[in-house]
Length: 316
Image (cartoon, rainbow, N blue to C red):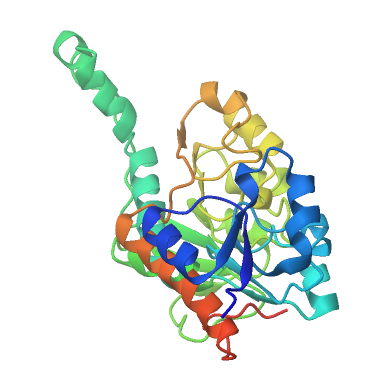
């Protein structure tokens, strides 16, 4: 039987690549010297696209595949997929939610602790010999018992909130509407008002046109000079220019970021900005979770070609 043709947008670990190569005729878009030429050649045969959340599938890529039936995303985010094209043509989309929730939430809290307790500068203080030569580094601030604001109370936002509760933090959150199961947490629908009522603002929203730059100059002003921002969602949710201005001007206390516009080529201002913790977009970056994500991505492809419902479909 002829194997289905699948366009693969970016590389996967070997534990995913080998079973994909076995089950499908894989066309490696990212390796093509002339990507347009590849699409013109193989696009008419492609029935599925296997991609990653950061790579997505563009309008042009989808248009080049007239037989396209589904797009399987390795990652929870699917904002880089041209969803309007999918809706118009009835193309199914799947992602890999849940399996990465704990790792991303763990990193978010680790980033908060590292930022506020200045773990990285403190280690540098020891390694440089300053501890022996100059004594103890400057005092930091307490995390336990402070106020956490969760901007976006989906799976990851709720997991962050539960972890913050373990530190005795007061929890407030913003979402489209109050969430079931959030009893004891304060619902504040407006982002600026949420910032005004928290010490640490976690950005955990899905990226949509409506949430673009939702963390803007007004929100940062409301957060104030003692507040911090932790973003483990999508870079587009934060106005990076406003954030850099706030950091450089001392208008907020600090920021911990796992995502950036144009990553990995981030704005060079971040490299010299005061009190900012930079991470390489690795919220889900554990072997355990990446294997689970890959399996779920492949399970969605398998289900589709077996004529079964997708395991984790995206609502279009």
